Structures are given as structure tokens and as C-alpha cells.
Image (cartoon, rainbow, N blue to C red; front, side, top):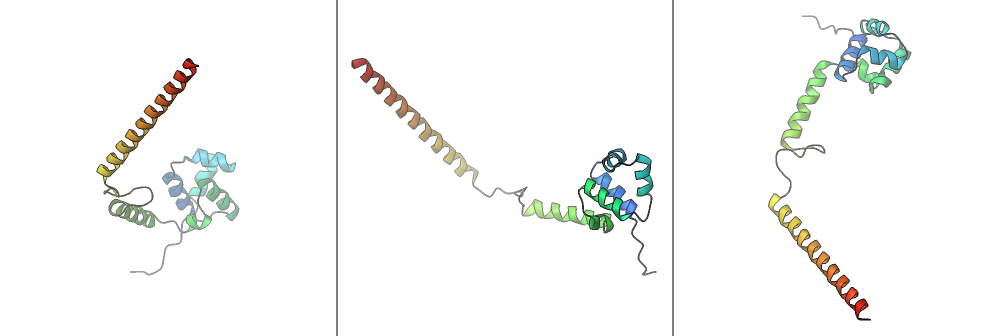
Length: 138
């Protein structure tokens, strides 16, 4: 078995990142001022001109290093780890499977706030009636 590593295929990496972002070749081509056929040729190339690579990275919303070091294995690892972490422990987007508060306490709290607001509203109406009665009595 050979220990030599395969050279990175920059064009293929661009293609995969573009596809993962849901972008068509035509959109990428238009954004960097090239034809769709030129983008197709770039994606078929092992090496890409550094200036074009910078433009492509900007349009794709990634760094040049991300394109150069892209591997599908790392993407799958990222999503597997993201899913594993978010499902059991939660993160800033997903609080996991378990609530971090007691739902019954929240209901009681909301009910108490509603009752308090209702009392304030009733008191405000009473004050308004008293004020109007004073005006009528004058």
C-alpha cells in the first residue's frame, strides 16, 4: 500500500462546496464575471489561478484555505459531531431534547402576570370612572 497522498484537486473542491451551498455554475460564473463553461473548466482543473481562487472563495463565502483543504470526510465528521452534540447537550440554536426550565412553573408565572395585568387594568378603569364622576359633580 502506498503512503503517498493524492494531490488536492482544487476544482473538484470548488465544485463540491458550490453544490453544498446549493449554487449553480451559472450563478457562480455570473458573480465572478466568467461564462458557465469557464467555471466548468475551472472545476475540472486540479490547479486554479490564485486570483480566480480568491474571487471564487469570496462568492462562495469561504476562505481560500477552506477550498484548498476541503474534504468530504471532514464535512461528514463536522455534521456528525454537530448532530451528536446538539441532540444530547444542546447548543445556542438547539437546547437539546430536554427543557432547561419547568414548563409548569412557566405557566404559573404567565398566569400570575396575566392576573396582575388584569388587576392593573381594572384599577385604571376605576380611577377613570372616579375622575369622570368628579368632573360630572363639578
